[in-house]
Figure 1 (cartoon, rainbow, N blue to C red):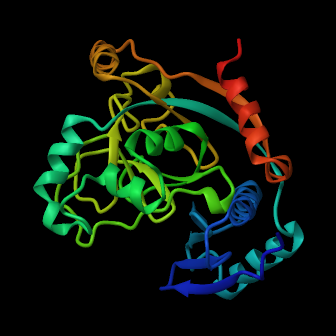
Figure 2 (tube, one colour):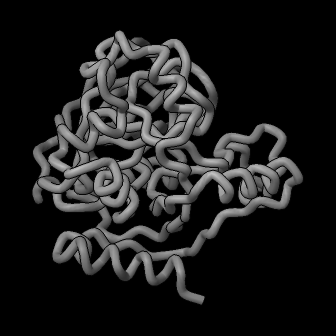
Figure 3 (cartoon, one colour):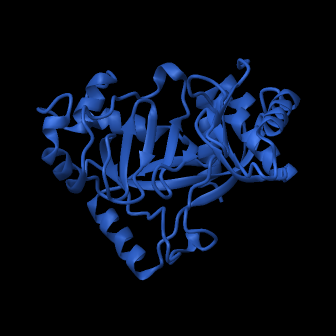
Length: 294
């Protein structure tokens, strides 16, 4: 898919915002990753921060070191030079255990039912119905069956936004709550629009709640093996495979989290956008085999 030219605008005196497309797609994400990586590699004078997002990016700069118009010219020239971006990405595929239909998110959603589209059902029941699944079990199976691409990390520290790696017609889509909650359990698996997420910390939220993971993804103490390098675990471009677990498996994992021995299954992988687009199902099977191979 060929993307239209990006739209550039200034954000105050120190930012340039670049919209790559008006809707999220893997092509827009790859173009953004390609451009922001190029900006970082060129170490442009005056650029102090580069923030990639789902289908856009923002650059912060020091106007005493770089004239705004000059920087915008540089960004436009990089877009022209790279075209629609790289088609391959060296990244990680990561297994995230999920206790679906858990008691904590179920209790939370009952406290905020008056803010929901359907106060008589649960978030999982609502998600299954609006996506045409026969029941909650079939919906959970679809949620866990295919990998998810981390397109952006932010909003609160360490929270990944994830894009389901299936044909667009098969993507799970669920509206957000009518009014946001003032509480969401830490490590809730959420979904709003076409995006999945993991709430890294407890707090307000508006996404539908499907389950909870025992795996911390934001750890300022860096007490677990997979966050030794950085307190925020996820990076844009990571691929996530959810694994359903039951209550006893969740409790066992939580015990390991508390004693510092919990770890995640992670494998290095080269992702090819071109090969994925040709046959998403077959490509996802290869990714899964890589995750669980020796």
